[in-house]
Image 1 (cartoon, rainbow, N blue to C red):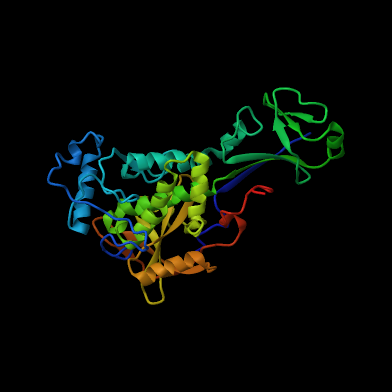
Image 2 (image 1 turned 60 degrees about the vertical axis):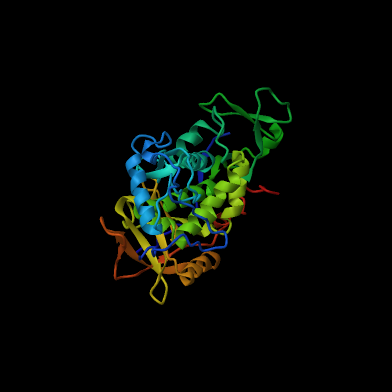
Length: 400
């Protein structure tokens, strides 16, 4: 088996030259940390009607809601009244929707979905996934934006380089003066101005000039991929996963906290707060590289990789999140309710270890547990490099 993770996170660059249970043990709602989500459920005596009769449940969702209600009751002993969200862990009368496991903006990605709160789904979609999905059309965004006729999205930045050194530039509809040099972009109505005099430009005119467009998608990518992996296991295992210690850790302590702390924030501030929260969880996400295993994505082929302790217990499930085409990402989630295994998982995220051994597992239709291969394989989970540090700026001089 080849190494399963690439040396990088979603930071994409375009440069143009220019001239001029094996997976989770059944448990109650016991969380792995002191910030344990509390689940309050059970239909009250005064409740009228079932969710399938409610205007908060769109057509086509009622059957799924009833299946989730029965699943929740099997795990906890009592049914929920409306829906216990696997991110907020609250049972409230709110509008529901189809929560797609992978954002629909990724052409060719799986169209699997599960029931989700509409407010939660919309918030993650507008604040984080909207930034990440530009990766699906990166070349088009670069061609039309930057130094073209339209502005780039917020996560993009274009630099003009001469001999590897950045030449500061700006746009203006009026001629700014002789101390600047105009540069008209071919096939574009836009003229940019270099913060150098024509004489200064003449001295470097023979250097190699290029235009570099970079997108820093680390935060929106990490949030979106963790959410997709979490919903993948919820779609496959229901509340057996969501109410396990590992499920509560990811759903409540990571995604739930991001939601609670960013729900009232504008986009820029929301990403900044999420960046702080993700600091200790950044090593959950890695790109997949090579091999045909997990090529379709866990939600499609019901397969994942399981990491095992030396004593023979599973401590992590590596979920494949396909974005369509050749882009697949891996998310490492805790998969046990044993405190020792959770400690192993948390320690791995915090230490410098990169080599682990994994087994391929598959959830057979009609079964409640994954069937695990007898053979284990080495897997490299890289942690070194500036792109793995959310505090490290992508662009030189940023943050100074």
